[in-house]
Amino acid sequence: MVTVGIPRALLYYQYYPAWKVFLEKLGAKVVVSAPTNKSILNSGVARGVQDTCLPVKVFFGHIVSLVDKCDVMFVPAVTSLGKKSYNCSKLIGLPNMARALIPESPPILAPEINCEKGRYNLYRSIYGVGRYFTSNPFKLKRAVEEAWASNLDYRGKMSDEGITPLQAIDCKLSPDVNPSSFTIAVIAHPYISYDEYISHRLIPQLQKKGVKVVTPEMVSPEELDAATRRLVGVPHWLFESEIIGAGEYYMETGVDGIIITSAFGCGPDSMMLGMVQHRARELSIPILPLSLDEHSSEGGLLTRLEAFLDMVKRRERI
Image (tube, rainbow, N blue to C red; front, side, top):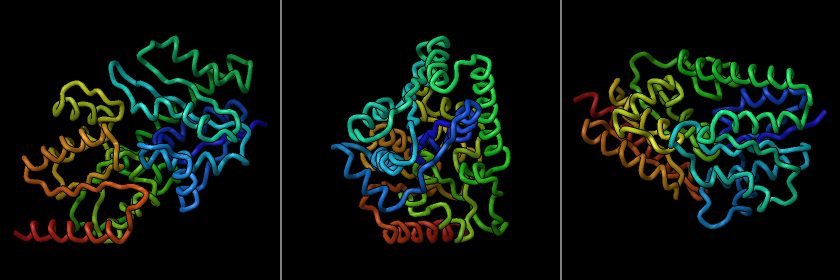
């Protein structure tokens, strides 16, 4: 049985259930790297090149941690999932960067997911990965269908039940919150929000203080896309709805405050978060921008967080 390694970083938080079903239905054994820790971060920082953002450095660290634990590494190159909407260049080139910077890595399976090239190219890419495990086309077709169903169930569970990816993956319910507490929207990409090491457990810290936390994953893709188009028209970045769409949606539906979290040096996020900040100021909604890198400290984040929550509480009393 072939063992496939999946790094617990970047698109893991969006697509892991589908990837797991797909690979296991093909007869592979899936192994996931441990949650991010200091050792993984340091390994990734050591492999990263100039201008590499924190999430990509963390991803490299997770690959290093899996080198001796799997036969092949699964690193899809997600270019586009919609017409004229593209991913960050670093994520598009992720497989090639991994091969160059981590030469000791086992072979990397890197299907190209690019809907701009049409359905045939997408099928050919996915079936190319499948042929690594089986020559049975019916088994491969069934694996693709079950993986897609798993992805829809995963997304639906988060938006219908109001839970996070970590809760959906671990089958946990959303924690009980005091009904009188206020609601804060945490707007960020999942690979920042739910990596508790690099985010310094931002969401659990808020919940511990009795805050009801809402995130982009708790909104249906259709509502996110509609909110994105209301604010900016046609989206150009692949995961733009996670930032702009979620920000607009929660500002329209009503929250007591917004925390937007990004990785220092991320070009697309710097533009998108600026739009959310501008919109929040127009609507007089309290907003806290947080920029994270490998030098960010938990103490500094908690200080800013407590000051922000105090401001929101005072505002509610007025």
